[in-house]
Image 1 (cartoon, rainbow, N blue to C red):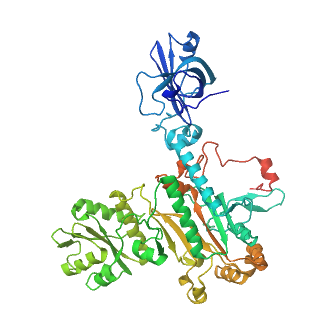
Image 2: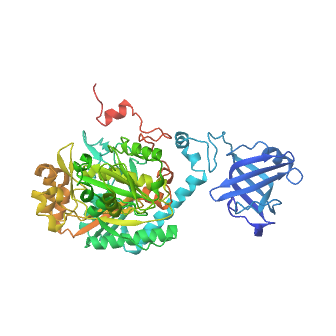
Image 3: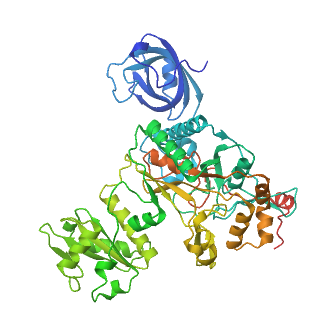
Length: 582
Ligand code: ASP
């Protein structure tokens, strides 16, 4: 038996017992006649003591050779500590060692295995197995496990069945590039890795499974933005015989369940907002509603004077920054510089200081009088002491810019408390989205999403205006889930694909299997998927998803620990019919 107890377990009540423990040497302090060793495992740290008077000499000698991260096993007696450590649960006891066995030695680790480490990102990733020994990473992985368990519990209780779907498939479009796998047995042909199990879960509905879920890896070959992984995990769900309302209620329930069980938080409000409203009020389809600073559209109260910049803009829109009237000229200049950075892209910013005495001082006093500015304050909800920041330009762009400013200011003002949770549904997304590069409409969600029946007639005339039965779940300014009611008849699916630029032949080749299935009694159905990595990070109060993934890839899509991707040899290339004759 390697151990009788874990290193997180022993208390005063165990004093007098003989125990055997195993683990890693966190550190050792050699005081000559006494050696103390902190022994660590997943469960905690227990202090060991080797005492020249009470521990056999050969064991003391052996203890002197111990280095950091050696793996050892000891047997000894639990004794009460003289100087107790109230910072750890085992801090009232220590083990007087009788026997020490070195199970394995360790090289000096390349970074310190402590909560605050001196290891940089790349080094930690290269030695991820050592990184995982550190509390922050270890705790994050355990936290992820808890969330996954609660997901499984909630969904199983609601009669969902977890079904595995294949990984070697044919393209399922979710708007990214596919990762492909060459088939040795089918010369010149490739599988695609799933961007999501979308078509399979729909086929499970045709198969009568009724309620499906799967915690599943998905793969998207996108240019990596910070904090995005080429392979990531979804909680993928689908239900038959449902309307949008049923889905929203079911997964509002899951979100509440997780917040309650994992975070101990009961959510009072779980609002729903249309896409149009979210864009108008927050300039963003995933608004952070933990704080105000809502958009005030100023076209009506700002386009009647000689200020050309505003008069030529599609949209003039502002936000009130609480307490911002006291910003110095220099601070405001910095804000203006911030919105002009290429990442934000505004051409400039107009501002109005709302003085405590009810008067206004603006950067456009030449054009607007106090009465005008009072209207701006009313529209943006600015109070005395606030600063109104106003941007103008092309509607979509200016909304995105002001939204970026709103989020930045909220962060600076400490309004984005990770312990506060504000979920909401954004509903009625547009069905299609115009793509300037390809000069074509693309499915905003994916090609299987059902248009709203009442908007169907506009598909030919004003496709951009057609709304979908599509919804996103937003938490603290992050899209953590999204889904839709699906098309479940062949004709509508064919029509949709033709609007997306597929010829009937292409549609048949790529999605014939799905449309055929629709001819055999497909039930009305819909679903959604949550991004598990991000969900876990947000519930865990963290910004980045990396530490919630055991072995993440870096920003170039590389696993630096195993050094992948890597070359394969000529023989293998030939076998796969991939030998390129250059
Ligand atoms: N397959 C979708 C996605 O990955 C989710 C869904 O529509 O259920 O975003």
